[in-house]
Image (cartoon, rainbow, N blue to C red; front, top):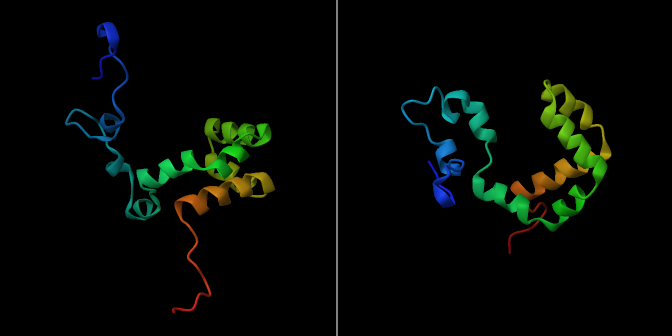
Amino acid sequence: RAVRARGVPGPPPPAALLSSPADSPWSVEDILTEDDEQDRVPLQKLKLLGESEELRGLLLNPHLRQLLLTIDQAEDKSSLMKKYMQEPLFVEFADCCLRIVEPPEKENVLPE
């Protein structure tokens, strides 16, 4: 356990949340199927999201922030995501995230 000043226990370090100690009932690996594993984004690429000025600019929009909060709090995230993919603002946000974690390959470029 992490310990803050004055001996007050703090939250566990991030690595501890992802590890799977023997007394833990499940781990991330237990709930991910092989298909899910293909969709997993490496932590290094997720960190790039926090460094993106374009993404930060989009997140200044209160409407987008409300959409994201609604998804986060929803029971049925999947159907809500489908609905929001019809919202141009949400699509712009999703596309921005994808460009960051999966930069488009250069197409129609002839090798020199």
